[in-house]
Amino acid sequence: MATPIIVRPAAAAFVLAALLALPAAPVQAETTLQRIARTGTVVIGYRESSMPFSYVYDGQRPVGYAIDLCRRLVGAIGKQLGREPKTEYRPVTSASRLDAVAGGQVDLECGSTTNNAERRARVAFTVPHFITSTRFMVGQDSGISGHADLHRATVVTTRGSTAEKLFADLHLRSKLEIAPDHAAAFAMLAAGKADAFMMDDVLLASLRAGAKAPERYRILDDSYRVEALAIMLARDDAEFKALVDNEMKRLIGSGEATTLYRKWFEQPIPPHGIDLHWPMGRLLRNSFRFPSDWAPD
Image (cartoon, rainbow, N blue to C red; front, side, top):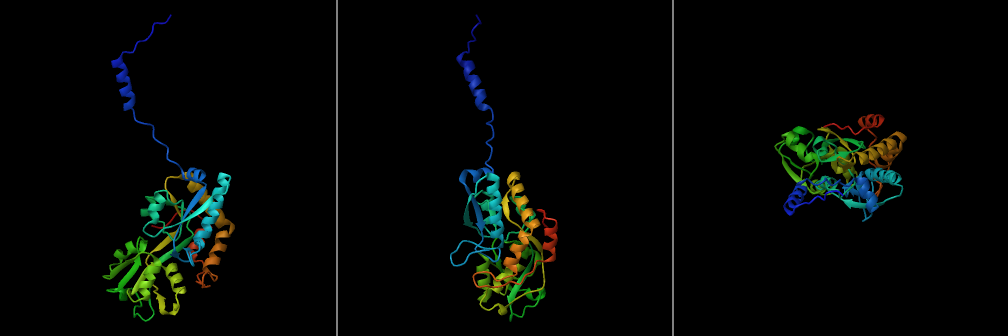
């Protein structure tokens, strides 16, 4: 018969204390696909006035080039999970979009967001769907014809945009006004509360095209920074990023992305049938030839 092992109370307390002192096993964070599988829903972050990428009219659900791309990404997610998830649309602004993605409130941010190194410290980006440059739009009768004329002008841009940070690097000695969104910024220009609106050239073109009198506005020739716009998603989620990247590459390689581009940039679009007449530029065509998530910084 084996000799019984007697554990005295003092020793037992010591063993218990030692076990409690051990570090707890790390809790594995839920991945994006796991969250979508659990909730049965993909949350798309959209912009309300980023025509033609992502915008709303007449109280309808969001539409646009980036929205169409994201709907196809949702389809790829459904194939991966073996069932079609629901889509929830959640509005974001230039100022709130990074927090929404980094905090897990949004799975795909589908708008007109620039991929740059500062943002990649918090979020990830897939393959670019547009290449743009920062420019200024002014009133046709403003007397402003180029960079030199912008000194001491009142400039407006959108809060949280890359243009807001770029403005300081231009050393214009101008007053900068910040608007909550693109529509509000354009309204300031239209009302004469700002002399120039600084933003991505294609967004300026879309706002001008949608105005009651487009001929009243002119986009200056000077270009300040080339930027790649891409759909934003969670950082450090390799599985989800690979799924999104592969679907974006398929859309580009199959020609579907080009077809969507022509639909939104070279044809009349809702609600007023405006046509941006904005053919795909050389930089985007080259990007589509060799699609990757690389972007200029």
